[in-house]
Structure formats: structure tokens, C-alpha cells
Picture 1 (spheres, protein in one colour):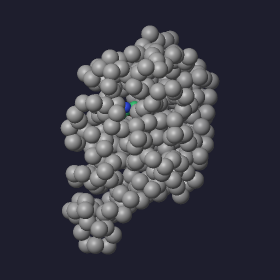
Picture 2 (cartoon, helix red, strand yellow):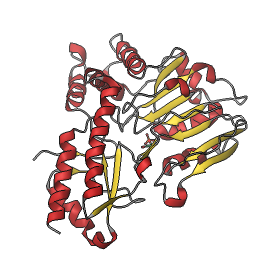
Picture 3 (tube, protein in one colour):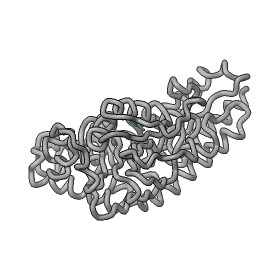
Amino acid sequence: MKKYNFNAGPSILPREVIEATAQACLDFNGSGLSLMEISHRAKDFQPVVDEAVALFKELLNIPEGYSVLFLGGGASLEFCMVPYNFLEKKAAYLNTGVWATKAEKEAKLFGEVVEVASSKDKNFTYIPKNFEIPTDADYLHVTTNNTIYGTELLKDIDSPIPLIADMSSDIFSRPIDVSKYALIYGGAQKNLSMAGVTFVIVKEDALGKVSRQIPTMLDYRTHVKKGSMFNTPPVVPIYSALMNLRYVKAHGGVEAMEKLAKERAEILYAEIDRNKLFVGTAEEDSRSRMNITFVLKPEYQELQDEFLAFSTSKGMVGVKGHRDVGGFRASCYNAMSVEGVKALVACMQEFEKAH
Ligand SMILES: *Cc1c(COP(=O)(O)O)cnc(C)c1O
């Protein structure tokens, strides 16, 4: 039976990306050696990093003056690297969920933190609007896609202070105006690659503005200067990122990815809104295209386990919702086909008929 992978992360990747990475692990570039056993400084590997950086710049239309970095530590390490490198006195955070809260917590170790707005009052089911950005803060931090709650900030906001974004789960799903950001980061394991590498897009002249000493590994300038080769980078995840970037380019770039994301989301949200058993959890104008969250209506709550078992029997993988929201979550990253979403919809319809 065909399986449809709706996991939130690590998550679905195009089959050809997985196959090309597996092949390179067996024999890298016909060298007779595995990608796992060559030096990251080998002359064959440098082109992998160079091409990955070039494709980032091309696909996201990154202006001059920005560096693309591949680091370790996950998005979670960025939660502390961001304030380490940018927070002199005060930082502003938009609180849209657990990840945003974790980022905020780290910033508090370095200075004053102002929460410009929070959607905690309604369990993060919406993206706050019309909040004021303090012009005396060093930066504003936002989480563009809230993987757990299924909400997404689909607009590159105008900020009078440097804008920093966690784009772990929606990078490469739409065109972005990188010039509006001082820094963008994310763990690769949602929509870019396998786990193990973190991407950072940083405006070079936004760095070096804090007076504190920064440990070498945590200083973005180290990695800018050394082209992500200060120490051994995660070579296999970088290689799989490159394969996926090539895939995105070959399939029409981020514009095409956005079109597909819209199509998938429209199909699935339409069914959630139509089906008598289910209801979406996110407010309509905050709905995420990447993580689509829904629950059973109160009168059908007892069907929770039954629907999970039924959908699993039909080949759906990973549709169980996060414990903070309950119900179901269908993560629809770039590699998810429209066919996969239609299969889930068919499953929901068959289940509805049976009840
Ligand atoms: C998954 C996720 C993280 C955490 O990423 P790690 O790489 O595991 O540290 C942070 N932010 C968002 C939005 C996420 O989806």
C-alpha cells in the first residue's frame, strides 16, 4: 500500500532526493568513497556547499550583502545565538506558540524582552495583528509558521527595527522578501533536508553591533568568514539539502512550490469545513499551508482513536496532532503531492459516511 507521509518533522522528502543522498553515501561522485568518509575540505565537497549556497541565493532571490550558513545545533541553538549576537539592551518578540516562547526564554538571558503580542489567550490559534513594534528595541523576532498550531504569518512584515525570523517549517514554500530581514534561520528537517543541519541567512552588516564577547562557535561572523567550514559541518544533511534545492529549482522554484502549497491547503481546508465530523483549529485568516490542524467536533470526540486507526489503515502516516492541540495535523511540505492530500480527503469522507 502506498504510504503518505504527513509527519511534522523530520518529514517527507522527494524520493529522488533520498535516493541521490543514499547513492552518495555509497559512492560519492564515482570516487569509490562514501560521502560519510571524505573530508569536508576535500576538493569534491566544497562544490556541494558552494552550489547549495548559490541555489539558496537564486531560489530566494537573496540580495547582495547576505551570507547563507549551514550550521549545527538546530533551530533551538539559534534561539540563543540570535540574542547573543543581536541583543544589546532590549529585544521584541511576537509570541505565537511553543517555539516562539522558547526563543523568547533564551533572549531573557541576555537582556530585556518585550512581548509585542501573544496569541496564548486562545492556545495560539491565531497570528496577532496590529501590534506595535518598539523602535528602541534591537530587533523583532517572529516565527513565520507555527508547526504545532497550524498558523502561519504569510506576509513579510515591515519592521522599523531589524527583523529576525524562525522559518523552520515554511522556508522554500513561498517567495520571501529577504531584504526585509536581518536574519532568517531554521532547522532543515521540516522542508529542506534531513535532520542535522540548520540554515541561516544573515545580513552581514547587521552583525557586530553588540558589545559582549561571543564564544567563537556562537559568533555568526566566524561562520560568515569561514564559509560554514570553521569546523566540520554536517556533510550528509548539507548534501541532501543540495539535492532538494536542485529538486525545487527543477520543479519551478518557490513560486511553483507556493502554488502547490495553496492547492493542497485549499483542498484539505475545504474538506475540513465541509465534513460534519471535523473542525479546523486555527482561525481562518491565520491558517497555515504547511501544517493543517483539525479536531473532531465535540459531539464526535469519542471517534479520535478510531479515525487515527482508520487513516493509518489507508496508508496515512503521522496525522496525529501535537499533544498541545490534540486531534489531527496533516503536515503538507513541498514534497507532499496533491494526490496525497486527496487520499486523506477520501479517507475523511469514507469515515464520515460510516458515522
Ligand atoms: C521544529 C521547529 C523548531 C525546532 O527545531 P530543532 O532543529 O529541532 O531545534 C523550531 N522552530 C520551529 C518553527 C519548528 O517547527
